[in-house]
Image (tube, rainbow, N blue to C red; front, side, top):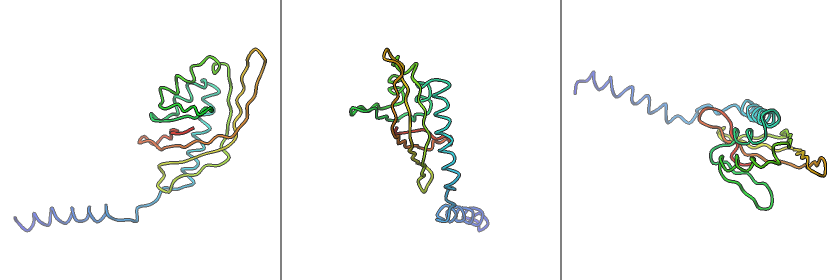
Length: 151
């Protein structure tokens, strides 16, 4: 092999290898990520109020999301979540929530939030309100959007 070919091939490959092995890659900015997750929570809640609970819980769910809705009831998968919220009682229900805390993993791929929520249902007995605390786990998707994987 000609010496100029070695220089042409080896040096760029060695540089690329050294760059890829460099452990000083910049970590994601935690405050920016926390702001993104809080904004996702806000957008999620806003959609539930303006476009319906079913649409919001479907739109913000990752494909493999799971929700816990009491009585040891876990609903797995985005389509199953959509079907769960197809129940007529959710058509006239309202829900509001806001995170009181958000945390993000060091690598910026996962986050969690918690805070207070309020569900309001209207039935034959009138208006019923339920208050509680939510905990949501979020995952950053390849397109940069945050989707929940646990709620």
